[in-house]
Length: 186
Image (cartoon, rainbow, N blue to C red; front, side):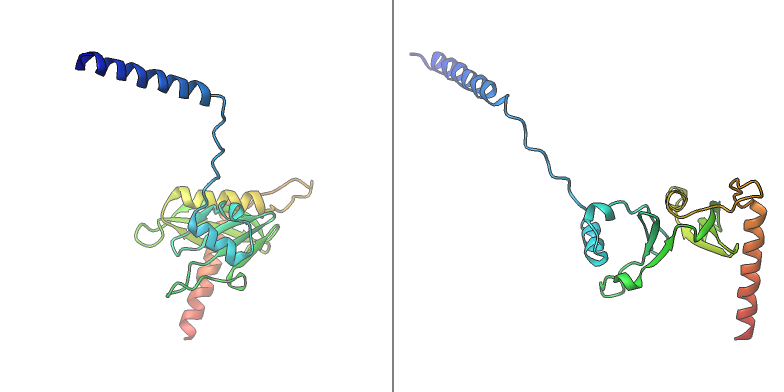
């Protein structure tokens, strides 16, 4: 046999073997891939005694590194690791429970200080705020608050009456006045 015929015969043989292998293996279903869990989620899960897949639902992270994690009718605010890599424990987290907030909104902040701000009002119309680098992160945190913890007050007809822009502005004004008064006493 000439070298050309031998080469062609080998190519045909390889092709036939490949087709046979493909034909016999096509009925086998591929093994389902196990979802990968982010290493940060694994550490948060370990520290918080949660399932890593639950922690994977970190809604947002604010400018200071605080993670907003929904947990049923609670939102856990988990601070970033302390310098030196020490992870916060459950007692370092802050929990906001259903009904602790009556409203939440996202507003534009000061570009060099807090590009986006998540503002919330507590039961007594007290002002709370968290700062974010992006509108998307602030909106994601607002959405998890609204889904898990925000319960607006009711009007005389027992209908929900969410706080108005004026309510937020008045609460922020009172908060700033209190802060200035405390600064002036130091």
